[in-house]
Length: 392
Image (tube, rainbow, N blue to C red; front, side):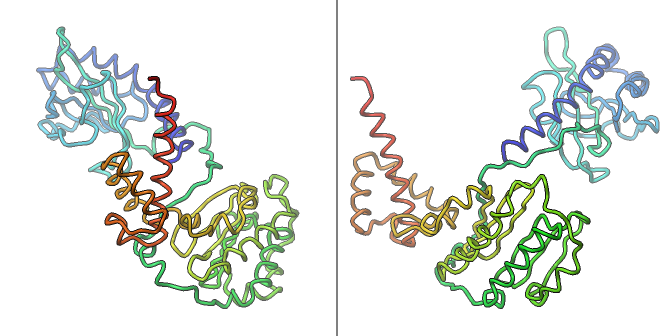
């Protein structure tokens, strides 16, 4: 999960915790002396229910997760829940290890099958031992939400795709599509839609010769354009004329340059090639999906700053377009080699540098072997620097 999304969730949980903690703490004090009488306990929970806004169910359990009260709700008391075993539910796990008030992670409720969370308050005796647990269940859709909208990160993100595609990458080759044959016309039409007809986001699927576009007048619905529509200039007549977005992060002059870069990535290599490319001119993000099923999201200016050598490189390193290819297996092999000790690692680096085979990398592709070598060199560079500055 990216950093900004985590921060947004954290802020939302903090707000919910502030809303609930004081009321649940007061209720816990009220219940301390009536835990052995489930009828009095249940009535106390029902009386307190209005003080817990948005609450779905309120109940108490013993320290083992066995319910000792009825379920209190806006419909009254459900006494059939007394004796229910909640010990395996996610909100009960690890509740005695931290503070008495605890807000669970979101989970799917058993009754409604909807995203929910539970506020927990541990009740303790005079010696500090837990004697009961107060639980308040909440349906996420009924909780108030902060007004701040989650903001997508502008950091470069690389995502792994289907391992089966990555594993067979060097057994495949680009097949010429109809869009490949009319690349210039297609790119010119999409450029016109973005500059003059209010299209703010477009994705070109080169291999299947189609595109999906989002238009400002109807942003919740995408339009699918097939090959014939993408090569017919009359298609522009179906989209109303609109001025270029004032809030666009991508300047008009950069659009043809970005599309020209798509062309380069599509045709530069017959094995590693661009399968689809997208551009959002408002948030400035370029999306790339390559034949290895590696996917990249990056800001347009960063994208324009990377040339062909960066994406495809030479034999000394794996292509950046597929930097995520088989990284789990490569990491395992690097870890295994490092466990043999520094002297052995230095020897293996020398052998890999001179193209001598070693047992650990014998079954790897040349790109994966290059990735192992690059990682070992990076690790040893850090080790050697530390050793040089280590006090004697």
